[in-house]
Structures are given as C-alpha cells and as structure tokens.
Image (cartoon, rainbow, N blue to C red; front, side, top):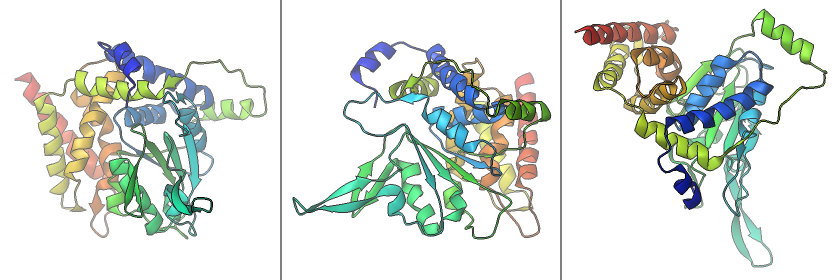
Length: 335
C-alpha cells in the first residue's frame, strides 16, 4: 500500500511519472546486463502490470544477474518492514514447501509457536530451475502468485503487494525434472525464451570480464513508486473496445485450431489487458494499438496452449490466430 505521504505526492501524477519510474529501473538493469533489451522490456511490462514471468533459458544466460539487478533497483519505504528487495531460491528435488513459504517454530521461552517467514517474503523472488522441484513444492507458489498470500496451519500471511516472481527453467534438460502443470503455467503472465547473445554483445561481455567496472550511481525507485505507477498505467491508458473484442477473438481462434487440445483461459485475457496498457505506456502512448497485441501475443499465450499428440508448435498457433485478429482490426479501423 502506498503511504499517505506518497499518495499526497503522487496526487495528479500521470504517465510521465510511471515512465520515469520504469526508466530508472531499466537504466540500472542495463548497466549490469548486456544485450538483453527485449527481455528487459518484457520484465518491466510484467512488473508494472502486476504479473509474473517464466524465463526458459540455458545456464549462464544472465537470468540471475537480471533478477538481482531488478531487486537492487527497488528500495524499501515501509517503516519497520524487514522484507528484503530480492531473494533467490534454488529449487531441488528434495525441497519442501516450508523451505519456500516458511514454517511454524516453537519459542521455548513462551512455549508458543510463531511463524518464521521463508524466502518468498520478498519484493522480487527468483525461483531458479522451478521444474526441478516436485509438484508439491511447485504448488506452494500457486497461492502466493495468484493471491499474494501464503497459508500455514490454517492462517494466512499476506505478501507485499509488489511481490513479483521471476522463475527459470532449462528447456534442454529433462532428466530429474517435473514439468509445470497448466495451473502453474497459467499463473505466469509471460513465458520468454532467451536466446544466445549476438556476436557483438558477446564480445563485449567477454572483454568486460575481469576488468574494473565503470558504473554510474544511478537512482533507485521506492517500492511505493512501483505500486503507484501500476495504478497510474491501469487508469490512464485507454484500451478501445475493439482491442478487447480482438483479445476474445484471438482466444477463440486458438481454441478452434485443430492442432489444439486445450486453449487459453479467460484469466489469460484479463491478465493481457494491463500488459497491453503497460507496453503502450512504456512506448510513449496513452492508448493501446493492435501492434501491442501483435508484439505480446506469443509471450502471453504460447505457454498456456496444450497441443494434441504429434503437434509441438504452440507459437505457430498463437501467431496464426494473432495475424487474423490484427487483419480484422485493421479493416475495422479503415471503415
């Protein structure tokens, strides 16, 4: 919740303020991460649209650096709050749900139990190799990602409203992994595949290794500023009825594709609206255009599609349905 002082300072602030907050975070991340501008943009869209992101990548691609840079860009502004900005959890097959959400501990002096918070109590949580933990541990994240709370011994403990999860999985290693169920995947706003750096960026990374870093002391953002920017974007970026109808038509096109066993959920369409608003705001507009939907459709929907046996290209299904919707929107705008 934004403090009273911040609320008074933010009264009347608009999209320029939200873009400034996003710009400060982007500058700090780009100072630590080379050649990942497209991924950084999607991470910012997920953060400011109050979603979560799944990175499918190979080891050593910079995912931890990205998450740390994001967490280190945010400052606490709540008095007497010990929630860290960033926590990292390495998922392994022998983990328990209590290793993530916390556990009840007996205080021998008072002879009472108290709740000791787990690493999930952070502003930015990096869940490394999420598919290496058992489904029981994976499910411990479901309530947190959907409702921003955890429940232990029939008592609920709220997470901070900023709570943001970056999870990773290695697409090449299937031994000892537990594929994420669709209910878990549907909690992620985006699934992003990170590719190898291009030659020029990779040379820059290699050249910079072991050398003194030339970094600037860039300003951080307050936790409340991120929360406030979310609300500004949600209320000040217009989504035309045609765009909303286009989202529904896109979902229907995916569901009716003969290659698809299970289409995308209504929840994914609801989550798509603030994502489109955020992308529009970050690109300097106060309205959503069809190109925003075209740009985000694959990371928004590809991981939510279940293909029939023998079919393994949900990205092609999403792109085909998106093209049809974009053509219909273009024709409607010309009339």
